[in-house]
Length: 127
Image (cartoon, rainbow, N blue to C red; front, side, top):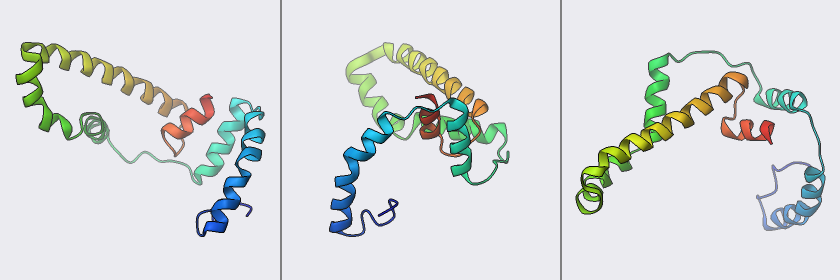
């Protein structure tokens, strides 16, 4: 089993992949690469160059939808009435600021490393 393709297709393949885990971990734990080497690997795995197709309002909508989610519409009323009271406005402001700072961090990553893979690629290059 050279790759991960057949690892989970059968119980025997799963067992073989499980037995390879300590050796793979030891090999990867001691590996040292530079940021440029890792970026070239990530770009090669990405497969193609990325092109800008979305406009700013598309990205703002996607970002807000990802951060806010659907839970805000379900739980806010009961939580505000039973627990928080008028402090819910302050909690929205604080959490909005935190989400904005997080969005700035991801924007900086995306500008510096324009590769497919999102957070996984950013973490792989960073650490």
